[in-house]
Amino acid sequence: MFIALLIIVFILALLVWFTTNIDKKIEQNFFATGNLTPVEGGTIHWQMQGSGPALVLIHGLLGNSANFSKLASILATRYTVYSIDRPGNGFSIRAKSTSASFEKQSSMIREWMDKVGIDNAYLVGHSMGGGIALRMAIDAPERINAVSLLCPLTTRLLKGAGPLSILYIPNNFLRKSISKTIASPFRVKFGSKQISQIFHPEAVPKSFAKHGGGALALHSKSFYEGSRDTVAAQGSLVRQHSAYAIITCPVGVLYGEQDAILAPDMHIHPVKSTIAGSVSEIIGDAGHMIPVTQPQRCADFIFTINDKHGRNISAS
Figure 1 (cartoon, helix red, strand yellow):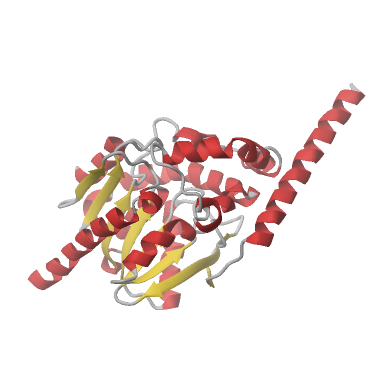
Figure 2 (cartoon, rainbow, N blue to C red):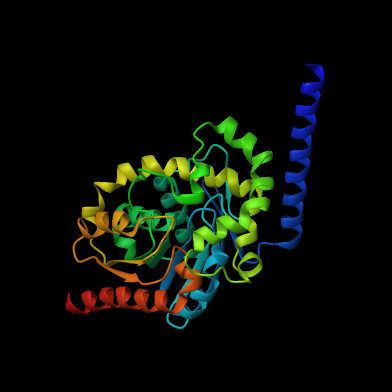
């Protein structure tokens, strides 16, 4: 019995050591290159490029602002593009006592907008970032000009989101324990397969790990905060679903036809059936990571949705 206990302690210590070393390597190779703005409940890391009306990019689960690097460069030809790390993600900070609900994330991003001087903005949300963009349109309609949703999470999941299902861990002690022990070793061993599933059917760009923000997802903090986001999303989506009908700004949904993470029909329907004038398009032979794999197609779609806002102003 004593020997068995000793073996378990040794294995746990080895896993903690491995995780700590992975975290250190990531921290040594990746740095916050943007600005850090404190808000209630945390700090928002953000970067800005281009000139013109404000446009805010909101990334998805386990993501960060670097996921939008190619898309941001295209959009910057017409907009002042703000790429943010959501609270708790990338180089942004979320206090342990701060809720991961969409309502709180919406509040934190809007406070950040106040502090950097953005009165109103166009929003682009990918995956979970899409659900948060919709929350912002509900909470502050006077500040949101239009919302473009790229493979968005818009309704409560009835089944898991592919390889991301492992993140649904309601118990915080268990979540923290897993993030500090087995999460990083598991993702180092099976990470390539998981990433391929997320990008399916498209190839994962060779530069994604280093330049697209992919490597940051291996940090233990990313797993922990991603789990918090995943659990909080379920209740958040239930609460906001009935409020979609009050959104009046232009809204568009763009999906990859073969998205293996979120079912297009399941997440397009709640938007088109409740938000007046909303539109949707499908990209054939594309998957969940279209901001990375289809940046020009995404940009063209965003330009079209945002131009509707301009026409609405001209007509009023």
